[in-house]
Length: 196
Image (tube, rainbow, N blue to C red; front, side):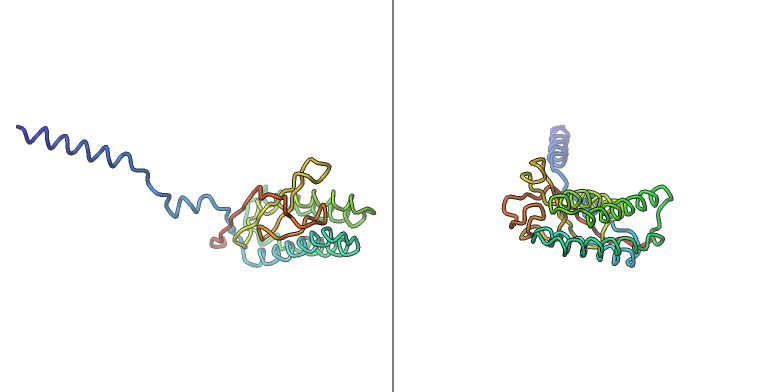
């Protein structure tokens, strides 16, 4: 009889200890926190070219070189317009959103190249950055990480940001200065999955 309460007590103590332990996140849980890049490599290779041209545009604005900014905007527009959207295996509503996004970015790049002042080009770049972030969130990206870097002291003191594949060391496209007072507002992690 004494053994029964002792065994029950030990069983309850064991259950209590086990229930208080928090399980470590599994690889599957961590994977759900990543953005996925589920489409064909040909699309992501082309999207990478768009982001390279975006970075050239950012660098030109940081150097305050309007001629180089115009050339980079045209190059980015060309790369964007040649994205193989038909390779995206997605429903028609999602595809329309991607097509609308690329069309809007292309139109904004056209406007950026047509602006006469550096300040107006930088304002257009802010819009391009915003729409590029939306596009990458819609489609995913083959790279591993993309950073959204912010500088609250730019764009009429309301804040502005840009995208970068590196978390530091980029020049601010809105001020032309090295990014010392900037913060990373978003870190987007992507991983590839089998193309559908």
